[in-house]
Image 1 (cartoon, protein in one colour):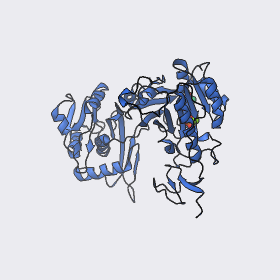
Image 2 (cartoon, protein in one colour):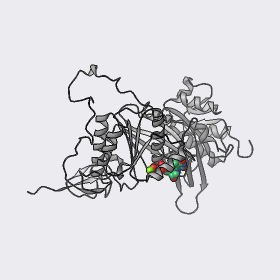
Image 3 (cartoon, rainbow, N blue to C red):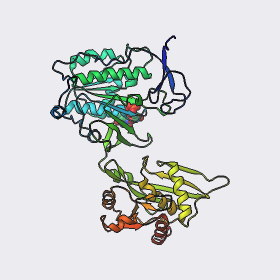
Image 4 (cartoon, rainbow, N blue to C red):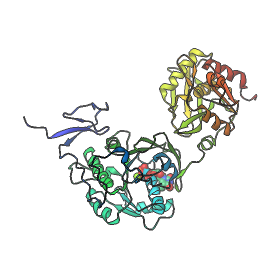
Length: 464
Ligand code: TYD
Ligand code: MG
């Protein structure tokens, strides 16, 4: 029997299949399989011969004797990035920064290249997308350019061997991995095979030289380009750069980190001079808040290990003809639908015949169930046309039975709320009774009780 000459690879998740299928058997996406020729298995040989004295890892040794002190972290100097990395870059490690086009990946990588060059080591910035003039113009915007920072405009992986050997950089930035191609694979730049092979080559080179490698990768919503997801198992750290392009807020989260936790989140704003760390996220998110308006409730959510206060807004209006409209931004539609059903069943307000709009201010996405109670109160407040008192926030998960459930790290959340003037926080009854959280905690057992509290403590609009 003749052997197949091609395999079919999913551009979303990298799963392989011997035949063409409409739907990927790995991740279930439709029409993402593309044909790839079967070539030699990916070669892990580095581009450049390893420096002499580089550690060899093919001898078994006692685990207890393994020296961990030899790989100190190199702080990048970009504080929020170091926080997410767990202190800095590890020599020889590979970090992937993924995100949608235009979110700020090039800006972040250039900022960190300049900062590293100033403080820590020698950096080679490789751009496959932009000309060196463009990169220079961007760098000028971001501040003074260190004289020794090296840049190279190149798309052939093999051509990186020479500068790598010549300059011995301690950090190499590749912007972006999708623009590179290697002679070892025939398909076009950006295809799954190319992206994987280039990344494998570069990472082998980085490992054998103790160079920290930063790969920038685009993720498109359609997944037409080989998404960085095919690289996830190849690299040590995966960072996702998120945000709404219409707002200046950007969040950097780790979804994989072999050297640290994936709990931390970096918070930036994109401004005239690039990305700035946000010291006080709560203050920023609440800066333009209108007090005394109905349909608004503050919730302390956890972004990584930091509590951040966010404003949830709701607008409830009687529906016209036909089906009521439901729109939510920054929070899952299904979550809002569930809360509407629970409010309908377990409180006295009627929302089902109304159009409902919910928005989390600042273009942030909230996935935590801890925001449930705040969403419910914002909805009730809009429906009743009663603004919540100015010093009130809410925090708790709402169950299908209408019960308000506990959430983690309540102490930290209450402290942050208190710090910003929200002295009273509606929380699940059990924790309020246990009393570890200060005097401001107001316990509620269920949404019905929370709505009643609102009705009794919030004056109708204009009469406060
Ligand atoms: P960029 O880093 O090019 O995004 P990516 O590499 O992820 O595609 O940045 C994109 C946007 O950021 C662009 O619309 C311009 C904006 N920007 C600023 O607002 N301030 C700045 O200082 C810079 C350099 C860019
Ligand atoms: Mg870019």
